[in-house]
Image 1 (cartoon, rainbow, N blue to C red):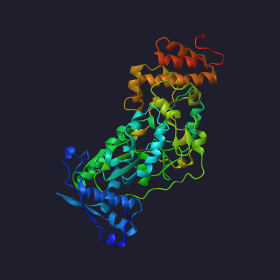
Image 2: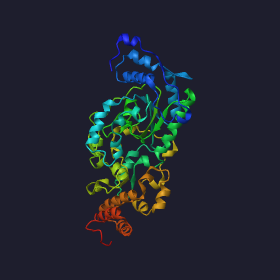
Image 3: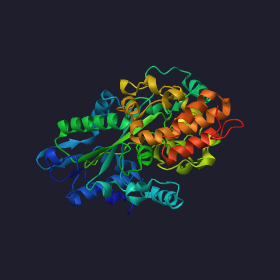
Image 4: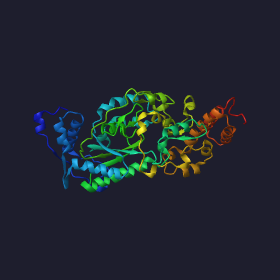
Length: 436
């Protein structure tokens, strides 16, 4: 795109005409009829966000009014503060607006996929560069509203990181990632993002939009960084100076040309705490994660057997891993959630491995109703527990652990049986078939 010259800027418009809005029944999907005006609006926003327009040009864009046939003109400068206020009332901590031009992220995405770092997550490769092209995912998209929602329970004490480290040093105690101890964030965020979209529609009339939270082929961290919610940490999570990394991200793709919020610069400096602490060395370089080694991937996404060479490093982590976040200095600023949805369930807050091992499928389904854990199913759940029990058996030699594993062996399917046999072999001087 040619940079704006003074003469070109003098011809810039501050009013953009968008196509007539679709009826509310179709407003959840931005259509393909945005037309040349919408494309010109998108181009203007790309120029603004990429530095191709002067500060004067950006100011003119920020003050732009959007005209839509049959609807009042939208003053974007006045709309954004309202969106922020509505979002906070819904439990979001921060709102930003990202441009849709993410072409600079495409080479990194391709290199990551070509290295095979996505493991068995075939859906990552299936969508290819569409992840960096929101307007291809949802045709007609001109901007992306990004949202941050903190998830630490409101009762979290100041020394929460020390408490989590202590839990990791208790082999017979199960460790579930903090975010998964409460309600499934997909449900919480998606519902509240839709409520936010509904409030915008009530203000300006129907508009094309779709809401996402970790549920679509989008480069969420890139969008969060471009919109000022934070920066990509060396552990690949979004980091915020005000909130660390203990938050969820959500997006609303809209057919409104909203002014982008300023991006955030990186503040990791020379720190390598997350790389140094990773139990399985999954962070192979700053900003580069090999998911195939990540405990979160192994315990949640991996459907087959967990590689034996990685099992000892998993310790008592049975669902997810928080180590890189616990080690990050920025998480001393982690914020508490204002929503009770993320309060920890007692059954998932550092419980005994043996208690969880005793659950049958009915109990698992009852205890994980509305939880993100339910989606891995009882099969992966017990596979993860078998590995943790084996690591606990190696650490303590507790006969109760061995007895529980042996009792489950006859009814286990082939995959679980292999993990149980491995676990039994971890006993000091023990073997799978040895009686306690």
